[in-house]
Image 1 (tube, rainbow, N blue to C red):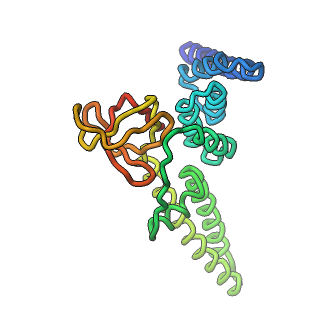
Image 2 (image 1 turned 90 degrees about the vertical axis):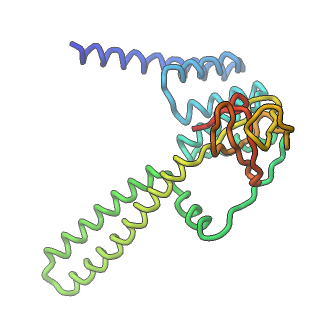
Image 3 (image 1 turned 30 degrees about the vertical axis):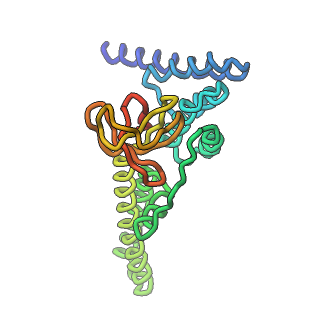
Length: 247
């Protein structure tokens, strides 16, 4: 009986989530962007998350000229689906509406090469690649074990060696990407204007000012303060209430 009630409750939640999503889409198509955003936000309150939902919510806020919420939701969409090309493109348009012009200093060296390679896929994708390569390794092992022809055994052995190396590389890539994902803490400035200080305390003279929509990275939290870094490497402390972390 409990299982039946659980299934009915789950089905009801899914129905209302889908209904709310479709309701938001209908509002959006009619140009009622405020109502569309409210409908999408209501779906989120039911703990229903998807890249498409955040993408549509970002579009609604973009139409409402709300820069920070638009950028925030595009970033959320990309976190859930790094291959969401539409979200990536729309994010670029939204970022053009921000006031701050922060340069992006590219990383160099071996770490950059590794990141460029592992960043091609999400860590979940790397995991599935590892599984596929492991199955291929197993098939070649079976072929090597049962083969009675010397030439065939050599081919299967060579294939085993290649797939074994590829499995190790893909597993390491998955671990590296997962570590990078867990440690990276992007955030968006939501306050219209926020001071950044050199120390985590009130009364300090600001070293620079950030405006809504600017992307930062959080490194440390002390009380109500968060230590942030900009894409150009500049660091400082900002009040926690001025930003919203993407992850």
